[in-house]
Length: 170
Image (cartoon, rainbow, N blue to C red; front, side, top):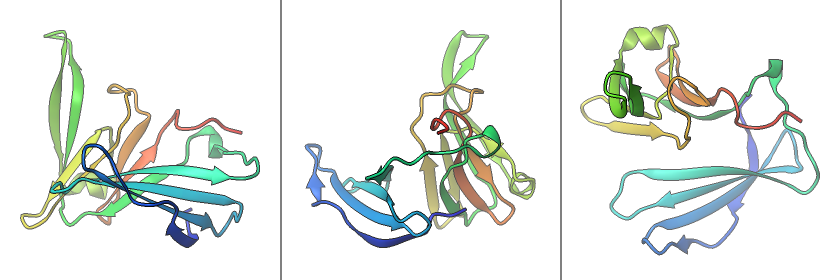
């Protein structure tokens, strides 16, 4: 179920970090759970097209996170792709032959969207010749032990979703 927020407002002053990055904080209240707030922190670096963001849940009273069917159930972000292919970039795939890790890249074309495939990443890159987008997450899991994954949908949507270890039940 998508998060629907109301009363979205700045929740702090704009901060300029020592490296010149500007940090913006916003907060909104869940319509379905009025005591729960979602804070989103955006970091914008001058001259850099990459937008970094972080989520935090805030509440004044104790609330419990649950796992539907015993599984993590968070979709962190979904983006409509303008491309019918996407590239997965793995930063540290272990190669038995050389007993070392290396960067690898794999192309997923239209049939992977049609079949709603998943892949680990942590980076996905798509381009249509006019626009490009990069979607990535920060997590230390190593292939194939997924804690997060990319989900492709047949409407050309790309999502980052939880697999395991993102939160404790109850």
